[in-house]
Image 1 (cartoon, rainbow, N blue to C red):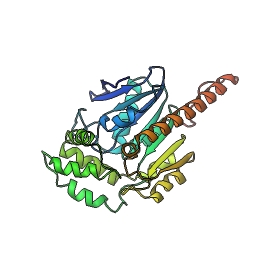
Image 2 (cartoon, rainbow, N blue to C red):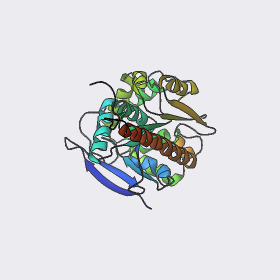
Image 3 (spheres, rainbow, N blue to C red):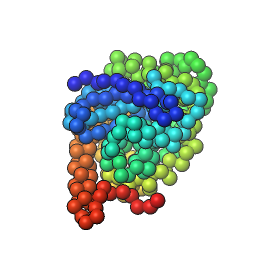
Image 4 (tube, rainbow, N blue to C red):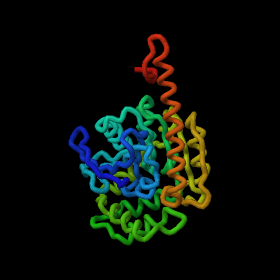
Length: 291
């Protein structure tokens, strides 16, 4: 089955293209791409996911061929878009899979919607970013970017995210998609990640979480990833030996297997809990406590 590309319009008029693959009755899985990428960053993963998963990969605001409003590039804005995406596609329940910084908005959405997010997969996602040695160095470069952005800079940026060299054709696709984000989106998105207290978002996640990290990641340390597991009550860490920061580029087959197994397990567990709630007197679908 091939990937189908569609477009959705969110409240307020923002248009987002998204890729879709899998059986319509499959387990809904939403893939959230990272900094200056688009849905195409997930092509290696999408084509390896089993058709039993109904996968959706939206391109986020300002990126790729999505709408590019003048503002709204803080992590909380991307998280709000993700929640609206679930609403517009009428996804009552879904597993969220965040790649790199895309996992920040994925975990924020999971914290907001624990009754709809059945599980969370974090693929090379930072616990925090501002404390990383290369963060301010990257900002110093990005702060000076002007349109048009030089393709050579983007190619060096993308090439440094994996342990093994990327397939040249796929690298060209990544560079082409990265170049669709204007310089202001590079700046505003990165500044938002650096200025937001990302660690403060972790304790609010109350859904099963799989943390995946490559042991040749030059961006994130193991300690950073273990801090996610320490902060999220139901989380576990899986280490990919020989993989770099973007584990789903270095090891797409393994990532697809792990995502599928996790999605099947948490969806079955969620269905059992819902069935148990309905079987109790006065029972109904579980909802989080509070207002």
